[in-house]
Image (cartoon, rainbow, N blue to C red; front, side, top):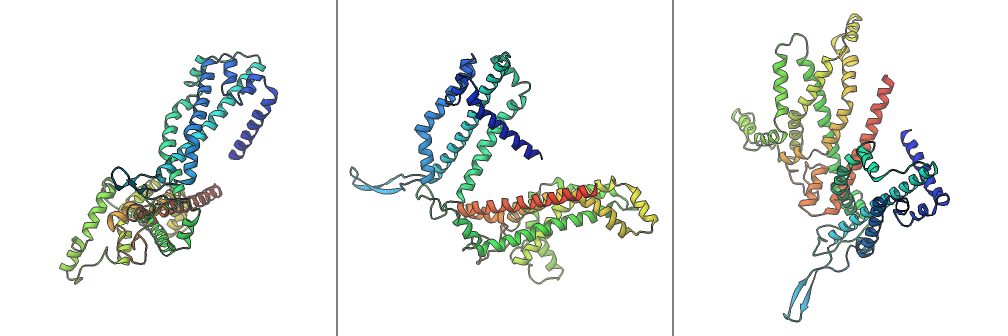
Length: 455
């Protein structure tokens, strides 16, 4: 309802701006062509001059650099780097050509500048409309000092958000648009600028990943990514709940000591824990040495060199990181749980397992559902565990740029730094986002509906 109302409000506002052109005076009408005309005509000189200068600056930029930037973004360059005979030297010298990467980046920046100008143009029209409405009401127009004072009062949010929004625009929106654009180009190891040009190829990269040559790598890696995320999330959750139940059970002594021991694992950075685990499970590490000394195994167990054993090892090691967090949250839920339902169930003859199944566990699951969704998405993009333990290995000759334990996120990393297939890496990034977004929306909707039914 909120979004519909906002959309309706914007439509009505647009109609008002359209009708204003037919009703307003000449200065207000002139603002549709010359920004700041209404302000200048009504003695708001500084604001009017600012609007006018920004319009002049944009038009000047558009015809000197902007149109060229748009043209270059469409072509992505026409002159490749080449050798050309120098008549003075009598030898061929390297002549620089167009850099498709920079041309695309400047084109994206030009697009953002145009969008900002359109928003500024609407601000100009809003200002002209406000002046006209105040004049119709025969109300005094605000002075420059009053406008500036409003930026520290009722429009304080504009002042506070200006710098953060600028940073988000330059360092988040622009790189994001650039990354998405790369997915529709031929920017790979055969078309690396500045030596070579790349061009627009449409959706062919998506077809290559989903049904082309890359499908034999994409779908196995996707399957392992989903299996890993599900198993890692569920195992950490259930074992964390069981651990919390054991520690908080009646008659258990030293509860604070046990909690402290497990919480200390969270105090140690995960990178350090993973590197220690990697050394422990290595062929010549502590675990293999201990097993061989006891005579349990005759040769080192391939914890990281066998594909299936490596996957199991990763899941087991991840428990060391995931269980304490779940245990801590579950402990808080158990300590704040109402005992009325539990006592009523005990009076009715329910045993411990029945109480846990019908009362305790549903409450834990309801409270931790959003956290479980977040953990699942985090495990889909869990770069550290895979990279620090196996580096994506062992190698798999059937895959392109990926190992047997690579997730989609680590495969993206390999495509970027190892094989320089930036277009495929961008496609993988977009597919990861779609996967995460769809799952999050569906899961949160299910949790919300369940919560409403419970209420």
